[in-house]
Image (tube, rainbow, N blue to C red):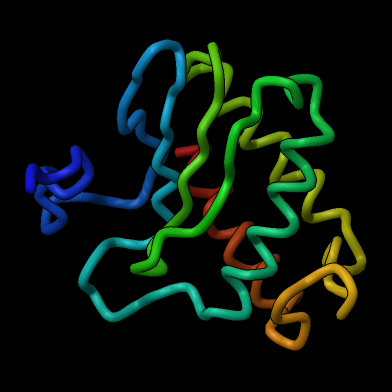
Length: 141
């Protein structure tokens, strides 16, 4: 099978940051890279799960809610994918900063009750917020 575009990138050269990964028919895939790949420093599973809930909620409650297609973690635990319809990189990055700032105001993880989540015990708001604070610093560099 043909490799997908993200497998064609040299992960030894990727640094934390905000990248446009691909654009197909007005659907933009953004790579929110929190960690340098293959360096042994990964987002914990519980923090990644909480970030997924926090940012998915923040994005879907933003002014661009109708343009949000998907937000979810990378299996390698170095970051997340954000898929937006008709939102360029500049707007997407601004939206991400706003979403993180809104997520940092939360006192609990949205959708983390047993009835709402398939693994409700696997959340860590404190670690999630620390990862978001660290990533926000990267976005502002």
